[in-house]
Length: 407
Image (cartoon, rainbow, N blue to C red; front, top):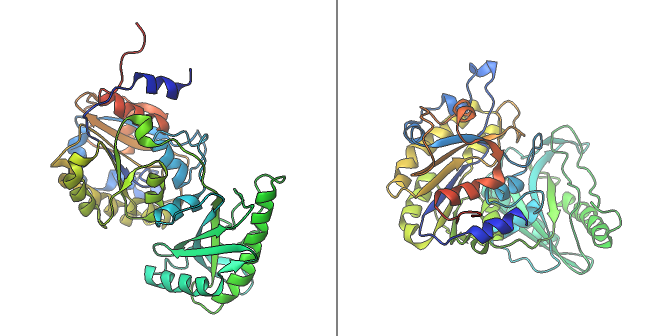
């Protein structure tokens, strides 16, 4: 019997309230330059500290040892879906998060504006994190100039800051493709290729991407600093079992950035729109408490600071989260997990393979008697090191949602 089938067989419907709080990119490394402290260890977190005393802690492997995850695999793992079994392109996730309705056969790409030098070398992958209003203006300019490529419709929609989405709608299209993104500065935009060289839909799609660049880059050539763009996660929408059917929990999502809304929508979570700050998200959770069984609350700014290599900003982002936490605790869920979708160490300025810390709090979670929620403390916790895809199962167990296995 497959393990998921066993979990389903043992699942008992419950009235418990469960909340998953994701501080994106939370995990970090203690380096000599920062006095051997991580941002989580350096931050003043009285509310997290108070929870830590009567919670269990551990570390989670987001995909597999040594593998660095993107945000998609990182979150799918937290939602209990094996990221190696359910692979979803970032373009699909971002498109859904921006409210685009994807049709069968659509291929979506996550894109972001970048800065190119005169030789076409990427000098800034995020174009200085241009303002959202600038992104909207540039996307409108592109959309006005590039509406179709051959018989394929091109849909362009702005996201936040430097991010946007491109959807290709036509016949015989398929993904996934390799990325049109060198993933670092100092290199040219690479040509995309099919992941499966024998797939005619992927071959056609790779040609469309090349043609799109030929007509779109000249539209931006006089813009500063966003005179180019990168594309990744070029794929079509796969079939994924719905969260509510899988776990017998009615789920809601409170996220600000489109990608995380898209991930939630992909598994059937209800997007709750409106809140823009973590305090507003927690307040909306309190207001919606009776309407849902499971709440996914996403906080971006820890990851953003890590990618910028800004230790002080990541420390402050953690402190801001902690300061808002008492709002949520007015209606403390029966089971509460606080973690990251992956680690984003300041020293690396990007995602990494290092296990992220996790805190699990419930009446049955056990008390590790640790003074703080930190990477060092999590190393000592009773949860040990486990794969992220099992977190939701531990949360269900703490909500007493599983019958006994065997006689």
